[in-house]
Image (cartoon, rainbow, N blue to C red; front, top):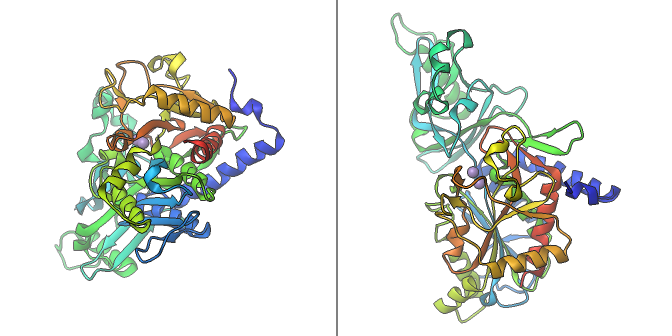
Length: 456
Ligand code: MN
Ligand code: MN
């Protein structure tokens, strides 16, 4: 099997490794969609990007970003050609499967305080128990202030966990099917066990003690959980995987791995012919809807704002801009796994090390729910990739009728632009820790650069 590894000389190999070093840093500081937005803005500003202002004229080479509620972003490098003639767009999502706290989470049960949760996205619930979890997110107060929370990432921080049943007493549990081994309503995180000093027969003193700590250390009252977004994610950092350090294991590759590589390519775009765009969106894991999801009017509004600055704005120009655009809608793909070979059809499976993986279509069953990229556009993609010597593969998620999945591709394709699914293959998708190949990370980054530069 030929992989990208075989073509790397010594100096390219060190570039491959360096990119993943930087990616691990990105991943470690971006464990939620909000943190991904903050980290992206910091990197964009360093690269000369400015937040959009309606009072500033724009010209070719300008670098502009739009921030939507701190949870999704659109970044632009203005091209030499008018935006009406189309943009080259990279899109990825920055939300990942996780476990959210409920709005009324805290309760005491037999001397223990627990936090009740509601999981986000498609997870195998049994994978999230008996492991250190960190709490990330925000608490919004009635006075308009916002408290950022990140507990459990520093060595000295406490963590929380969702317990699992000991094997010694698990006879009934072990005979259940996978989806029932751990059930959604039972995902309650253990958060404390010391009672506050109280009156005789006073109830819930352990919870009282915990609320005292929350008040003292974070200025949070119990009611403030109502207007909070607190996400439980695996505590700990992304690590090199494999004795040859060829892979990265980390939380949230889906889809920050495509977000990072798309961003890295965009930040290097200088005065392109066609305007370069990177859309980083929220809510993909729960259907792309809502104000910060890909279906939101946000992106279209940002295009309208820029067209307006280019003069003589009208609705038709907006429609032309969208219609003349091309997009790589990037999301992780399933990497072939020798432990589970039966779910793939080898000719059309994605393999570690063979580069960025394109999917002409996604969906399930008879391609249901998929935006099937037109063959004419697929041919252009092949041409751009070949001319830039990018390692790439064409794959499907798995065997026909084995399952399926969706992405944001159809959302933009519905605006009548050319869109194809692309992305980096991962193992253990949606598990607390996912695995990807450093060669694929590097080739995706190169693919995005080639696309921004050469797609016509
Ligand atoms: Mn995804
Ligand atoms: Mn996903």
